[in-house]
Length: 159
Image 1 (cartoon, rainbow, N blue to C red):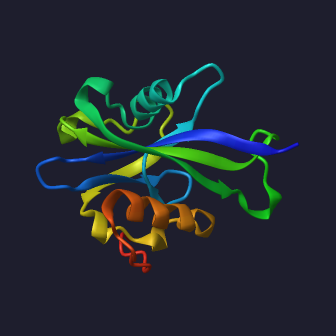
Image 2 (cartoon, helix red, strand yellow):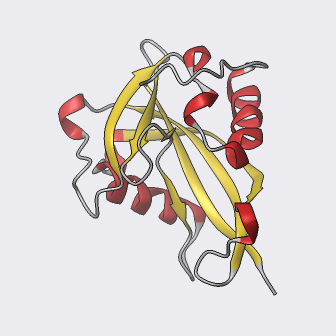
């Protein structure tokens, strides 16, 4: 029976100006998201957060601090796709973290490269047009829950 894969995602925020980091996926150009990934067997959520951030953007845990955490964001993969033959979708836990590093501390090639670009934007400037349709409901909830934003633009202005 297919189940939902546990997943963590991080919203890195610059505390001085409130801008958040988004990154463009290498395998889906034009798709922008937060660093995120699956929770390994035997791993807790914090451990998965630290590992995923280090793997995906090369940032060590001493360069950010957890400000808030919310869970139970869920989406299904389209067309009945099963990830690893087991998972019909993901259930995510989002972490809002204040970033204390610099641009030089971000290394998209630290591990297996998943992103080709990143940028810092104001949360209200996030564009749903750069998010796959099956994930948009989750992104709307995340922006409402963390930033009080009820409507996001949908034009793919990042390209």
